[in-house]
Amino acid sequence: MRRAIAAIFLLVVLTGGPEVASAKVRYVSFHSNAMRGSLHYAVVLPSGYATSKKRYPVVYYLHGLPATSRSYRGPGWIASAIRKRGGQAIVVGAQGARGNDPDGEWHDWGAGRNWETSVARELVGRVDGRYRTIARREGRVLVGISAGGYGAALIGYHHPGVFSVIQSWSGYFRPTNPQGTAVLDLGSKKKNAWANLHAIVPKMRRRLGRFYRSTHYGFYVGSGDGRFLGDNRRLAREMKRYKVPNHLFRVYSGGHTMSLWQKHAPAWLARALKQAARAR
Image 1 (tube, rainbow, N blue to C red):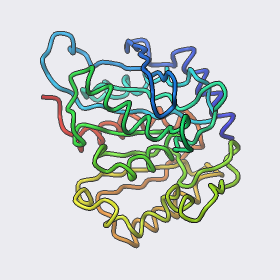
Image 2 (image 1 turned 90 degrees about the vertical axis):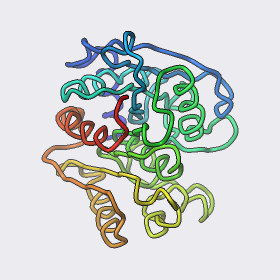
Image 3 (image 1 turned 120 degrees about the horizontal axis):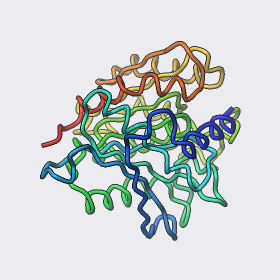
Image 4 (image 1 turned 45 degrees about the vertical axis):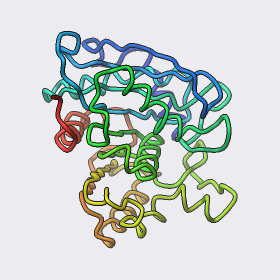
């Protein structure tokens, strides 16, 4: 299923999708120490950026996996969804795959393959240094679809001082194989727990510390999502059981499809930007 979704996502990237025409996407590269090589990102600036002196919140978007080295190039539909509700934000599409590494799960695997660090540390630093951002956690939103939803949840909760708003759209909460049918064993109990949001929830108050009540987490899934519906419902029960503040869970009619994400993107991104710091 994830391979099929990746193919659909690539089609949207290459064709521009139904609502990308109004959003000018720029492509930037930088040297990544975490990945020991070049990484890329796509950026869409808000209307009026060039003529204003404002600083803007940033929405970081994580694509689905498996993917190609060009899959980061498709955040235009996110920018268009923000504009539908009159929002103002810089949108950044992060690279989460390379030709020899199509499914890194947005995880840190070791030197030269530390996807998580490349996003949470390097990419954020590059964007803050290059654009007029609100360069603190209140100005950063992290959103992902499918495997990108898993990446957003784990990176967001691993780095609570970096992102204040996290959203997972049809994601899952433990690293899986490319088909999304089996959980990966990372080699030790400690590593498996670190990559498992279910294991983090009971320790959430201690893990987030002073950011515990100022972190906003939203996640949803389609009612026909046969792979990940159960995992999402389980996390919702756990969040409720441990009284994690500022979380929202929804189940919508639909499957694991781009049409589901496009339909709900305007409302969910508007919610995220309401929770984040406003352009100023």
